[in-house]
Length: 68
Image (cartoon, rainbow, N blue to C red; front, side):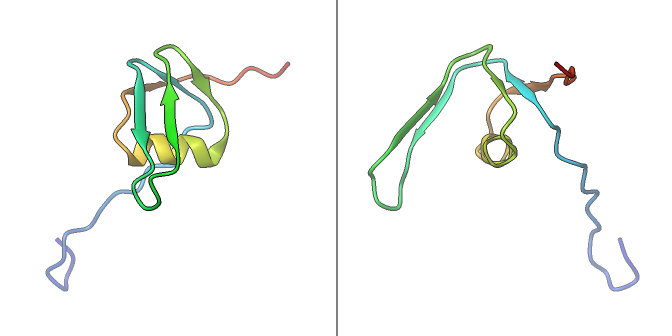
């Protein structure tokens, strides 16, 4: 706890690439206009998509990026 009585959170840096270890998908709930699906094994490198999948509770593992 901090000196103000609040619990402190450790924020880890977002991985550059993840591999989904299980299929993940959802229906966009605000406008109900989109269905999103990622199969197990897919490697995701787009930072916004990585953040979205982590936020939505997808099952993933870090993938070490290799320069092409």
